[in-house]
Amino acid sequence: MALTATPRTATFCGDVRKMDARLNHQYSERANGLSNPLAKSLLALMEEKQSNLSVAVDLTKKADILALVDKIGPFVCVIKTHVDVIEDFDQDFVQQLTALSKKHRFFIFEDRKFADIGNTVKLQYSSGVYKIASWAHITNCHTVPGEGIVQGLKEVGLPLGRGLLLLAEMSSKGSLATGSYTQNTLEWAEKHSDFCIGFIAGRRFPNLQHDFITMSPGIGLDVKGDGMGQQYRTPHEVIVNCGSDIIIVGRGIYGAGRDPLVEAQRYKKAGWDAYQKRLTRK
Ligand code: 6AU
Image (cartoon, rainbow, N blue to C red):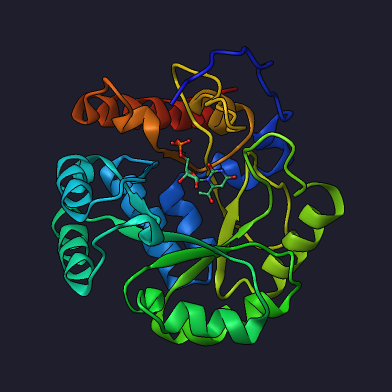
């Protein structure tokens, strides 16, 4: 796949620490301000492992995914999957991934991007081939169907101790998740803050009533796009300039010609350095 190097203007979201005083605190301190137990554990783990790196493992073979995860597991706080692209998916994959999550201590985020009415997403989340709710600590959804999608997922996930991320924005060019769409998304997160642990977005949404975790995809240190609409920004831009908490990196770690072990450590350092800089910046 052709990676383009079209330059994009560096983003600056304002003085994020002034906009939201919670960003003056370490992840572990912020854990007290979130009600969802999984969100608390995630923030504590990030501080412990000194990692705000989530790796998007978008590979199609079970063995390749498990081998990569075993290699990079020590450097990440979250492993993100797309199980519907795995050609040989089975319950053994789930068991092995779960074992790796315990061995290396990371959370599993199935990037399912649910987008249907409440009743349908309840079935998609709990049942079918994947039974996502039974093993994924975190999942996410679009908010295009309205608040019912959050209610449906919550009925399944909350009793299991799971957490939900709402797609408030997207990293891709021309995304329609902007303006009042994003605003409504924030309101539903506030209303369901027991289950919604945060957002997929490129920036912190300041001064919401509850604290939330912001996870940002579209992160690259070397290239600016992928020729199919993906837009990359650096860890510095999203964490220091825009107040995000976790960087999500896929092909930057395991793309053609890259050594995942080297790249995972490089992105982990870039993410953590950016976080330290945000905390100490005057
Ligand atoms: O670093 P990449 O471009 O190889 O991979 C980015 C990963 C992919 C996307 O499905 C996902 O992040 N993603 C998401 C998520 C996490 O929900 C939202 C978005 O707006 N952009 C995006 O790339 O697995």
